[in-house]
Length: 136
Image 1 (cartoon, rainbow, N blue to C red):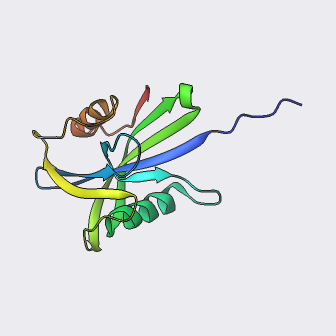
Image 2 (spheres, rainbow, N blue to C red):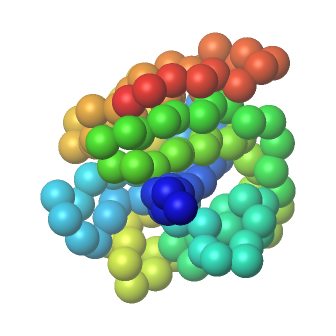
């Protein structure tokens, strides 16, 4: 019997206020700026995972809108899902694994980001009705 390889699923959300996008500065690794989000835990739905991750990382309560993109990452045996969301409550404050939470103007995003980040932002800004599917 062939064993199915384990696939890591991570989910991230675009949260925009006026012309500013919420990013979090990771407190680990290269301390990149990123969208809020993280890995879906066992027994958790995608929706539950993103609501939990955003609350943990930023203190904010959100609702989920459209799916922006599905990003296959074969070198990492992972799938990243990006969603658009809305802030409905909470207080913006980083948790222990996040150094900062900040709203950046869309034309002044930080440079310390993963290589795939700007491609995902472009996908979000296009506001396509259908999700983008890419390999990164």
